Each structure stands twice: as structure tokens, then as C-alpha cells.
Amino acid sequence: MVNSHKPKRIGILTSGGDCPGLNAVIRAVVKVATYKYGWDVYGIPYGTDGFIEVLLGKRQPEDLRIRDHGYDIPGLVQGLDILHFLSGSVLGSISKGDPELHADEIIRGYEKLGLTALIGMGGDGSIEILENLAQKAAEQGKAWNWVAVPKTIDNDIPFTEASVGFDTAVNRVTQALYDLTFTAASHDRVMLVQVMGRDAGYLALEAGIAGGADAILIPELTPILDESVVQGICHHIAQLHKHGRRFALVVVAEGVKNHLGQKEHYIGDYLAQRIQEYSSQSHNSDLPDSLSLPSLDTRVTLLGHLQRGGNPTSTDRLLATAFGREAVNLIANGNYNQMVIWQNGRVSSVPISRVIEQIKKGRREKKAPSCVDPQGFLVRTARDIGIYVGETSIDDQ
Image 1 (cartoon, rainbow, N blue to C red):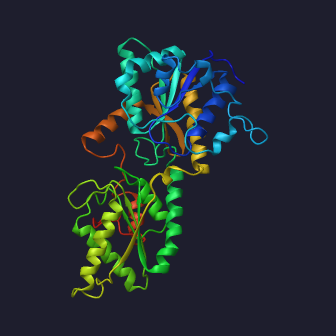
Image 2: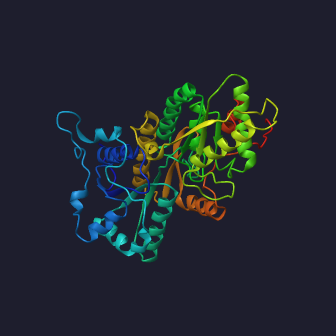
Image 3: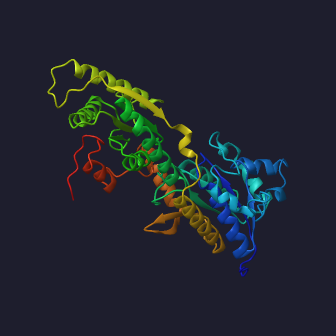
């Protein structure tokens, strides 16, 4: 163990929606902090709420310390290593309320713990909240040093090519599409799968390609389910029928809106109804055979929070471990207010201020901080292998 650095006390918390890989980050942080630097690590329960509990005396600081053998399972696994394989967050998380309303209490709780720095895992909303708390502390002349670790199954955080939890979610949706393929084929059905992706379509696009989808609808390419989009899907299914394929898989991200540009909680059901209506009209019309359809039998699967579950994939475990290590090393070097990122096959970091700029820009433009490139490689790949992703033509480059 290298202990040339001054001993520090660091905190770690998870905020926002859970996802696989969070516990692997915790494990990596504790191991690196303990074995490399000889520091103490304190797990903050339920995001920033934990600071308030410490301030009120509901939790004692020493009770929050995470030791190497803090999660022993007698006779099976020793120490923290079990966390490497678990989904969710053993610290708990929060995804509602407004922590900034209790900023003073949270900052005082941070001080009571005597933290040198905090590692916060979160998506765009959580990162912005934690940075606002840091700015509030600075205004009071207090230190709130922190490092952000990006995690989200939407993969929509700027500057990083990958976020903790995304790869596992892609695998979960891909497996669902594989499973649904055979029941779709058995009954000549159109299976519509609604997946998460409030403003960004990375999950729908990557899982759709990997899972053999025939159509993928994402906010960046088909933001509104107008008549042309419904026609496009139905004409695509008609072509499949013409070549002997009597079933289809359609993936739709939850951020796609109805024909009026309004949010639908069950956009999959809405689309299924539109497809059925169009196919029934087509069946009773004089359309050319190439565009004519039988009345389609549709079924909808809403994967919901199943997308957040499952054991983290090896890719997510590796990413989480690399992120946790980098976060601790940034603190060791006094390089605070950074977000760890994955770019070009390696871990690095960017100032959180730059991340916040992109988050605010996205909010002004009413889109995700990081969106699927409509002319990107994956969109081109989908089109080239015959997946319907919208009518916009993209010239080859």
C-alpha cells in the first residue's frame, strides 16, 4: 500500500435512477482509497438525504464508513467483492424532490463528516444538482470538493462515450427482442417494444440493431409519430410480407411523441393502435400489392424498470472499476470538480463546468445533453441493413 499522500476522508453517493454497475464503482473506490492511499471512505445513504441524516444525528459518521469487509457473506464471499456482481445501489438512491431546497443542511452535513472530497454518481440532473450545491457552499466560503461519475442507461451525458449501466441495459433489451422474435414468428404478429430514452435514442438504437429489430423509432430521427412515420413503418412491414416474412419487431423509445407532438406515457400502445388502423384501411383499399397489408395483429411489451436490472455486464464492471479508480486518483492529485469520462478507449476527465454548460444548452434547446447523431455510423448501419428509422435520407460519405 502506497501512503505517501496525506490521509483523506472521502464520501461516495448515488443519485437519480439506479442502474447496474453502481456497486462496482463503490467497490473500486473503497479498494483504491484503502489499499493505495490508506484513506477512509464513507457511504452516504440515499443521495444527499444522507447528509441531512448525519446533521440531525440520525446516523453517526462512523456507521457510514465502508470497510473492506463491510459486506461479508459468511462462507461465500469475503469483503467488498460481492458488490462487483450486484445491480442497484447498496447505498440507496433518490430520484425525486429538490435537494437544493435543503442546501444549507446538506452542506452542514458534508462539513460534519469532515470530508476532503465527495464522489457522486449520477446522470445529467444529479450532476447539475451536486454542482449547484458545490457553488452554494463556495458562496458561503465553504469547500465542497467533488468528482462526478456518469451513470445512466440513456447514455446521454456529454463528453463521455459510455456511462455506467448503459451496456447492461442494451443487453437486457437485446435479450428481450430475441425472446419476442419467436412468439412474433409463431403468430405472425408485429411486436412493439417500448424502451427507456426520454430525450435520447442510444438505448433503442443500439439494442434494436443488436436485437434484430425491423424498425427503430427514436426522438432524434422520428420525434413525432405523424402520418408519414406510420405509413413508413407499415410500408416497410408490407415489403417484409412481400418477401415471405410475416412478423416484425418494432422498437420505440419513450421520448417519441404522438402525432400532435404530445407526450404519451404508453407510446408503444399508441403506435400499435395507429399501425392497426392503417393496416385495416390498407387492407380495404386499392393500394398496389407492394404496399397492401393484411390487418396486422400487434402486441406491445413495456420493459419498464427491467431495463435497470440484471447483473452488470463485464463491460459495465470494467468501466465502473476504471471510473472508480480514476475518481480516487483525481482526488489524490487535488484535481477536484471533474467528471470522469470514457473517450477513445481510455479514461480521462473534463471539468464539470463544461458538462454543466452542455446540460443547460440541451435544456434550452429542449433536447438531451448528448444525442444520437442522425448522420452517425450506427444510424447508417441500421439503414444499410434494412431497418426503418425514418424517412430522412442520408447520403453516403
